[in-house]
Image 1 (spheres, rainbow, N blue to C red):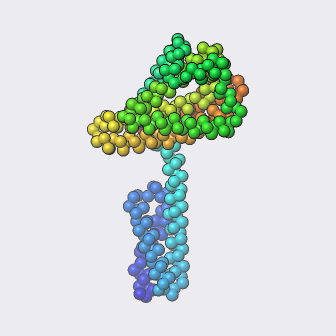
Image 2 (cartoon, one colour):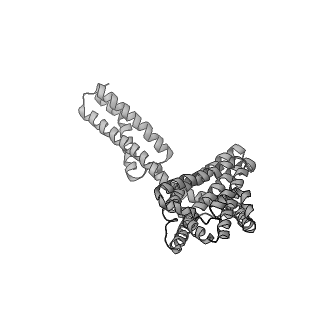
Length: 325
């Protein structure tokens, strides 16, 4: 094929690729119409094929150089856009998708919170009334005698090795969160049990320290990191209940479709909680056990609580009207 005929037959595709690349210079790949994205891929492959033909058959160095530059330009724009899209997806998830999912599913989180608090009250009142009640919620007599009754401030041990303690706390908190979520596969009953048990356990430990005369110290220690940490546990519980509800109450959807829909929302809640739990672990490892005034720890609790729930309630509303459903 002559060089002129080759150019005449193929130049339309080359020009179209240039037009699409010019469009990409003014916007992001994700803002292109789906058909334009498909056309970009098809045209890029066609021009790359034309470059291979031109190198093999054409003696026109200007044509080869033009096509080579066009292919390099297209390759750079497509793959650079793809890598940037990954960053945009992460940003958009935390700026919009995660808080919106929380607002759509807040009733499930509220249910997990209510179960936790009810059993925390039961654990506290029961143990305050009768110390042996704590054994019902998994606190053995040996731990009680060597820790709370002996007046040991065990949380202060974290201050001796902040980095190791902080890393352990992060891993433990994330493990508890995933357990609360995974138990949702037991038709939601497992998640309710996890919320009830953890609530009763914490309530009983608090009661034991109050009986020993230093409950306020433990409460102060818990305050700095507790708002974020417990919020994530409630969110994980809500995610588990989403899975359970899809299995038991799929509404007008098939169970498979309900699992797909609510499972996607549940996973978004869990993914959104992971960096929050990392932050809670850092606070618990470095600030909560520090020998500073309780006012600072309570201030951190208030600040993180206001910031977290302002974010969950308001982020992502600027481009869509939303209501609590």
